[in-house]
Length: 115
Image 1 (cartoon, rainbow, N blue to C red):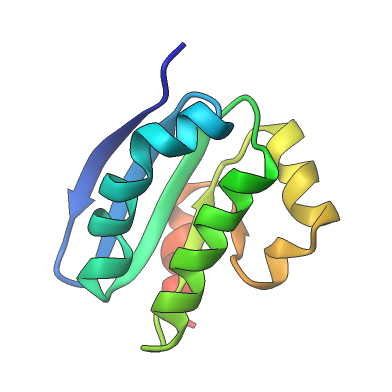
Image 2: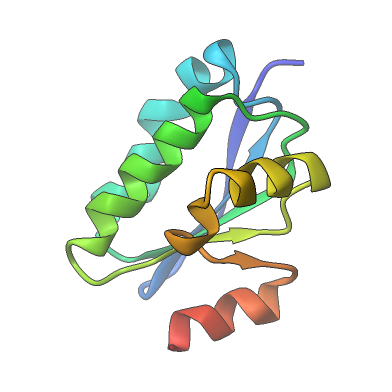
């Protein structure tokens, strides 16, 4: 299954994108440029729907961290929305949930943006 990036919403206060497919070498290569343009380049908060990501390699984590660092420089956040269990476990094991909060639903994601 090829990895794709869906633009859910590009609101004034935040970007909301959905990643569909694995974030392995091929997956990151397929979406990295568009992902960065839709999130970090906009200089707003970003909600990243991870509910359709069955696997994430370290390269995928690196892509997320790079965007999170760029946005954090401007006091903006990356919120990871509904990651699959295997991806959430990988994120927590790598302690990336300290850099990018994990939200179980859209309401919780918006709550993170207000804090």
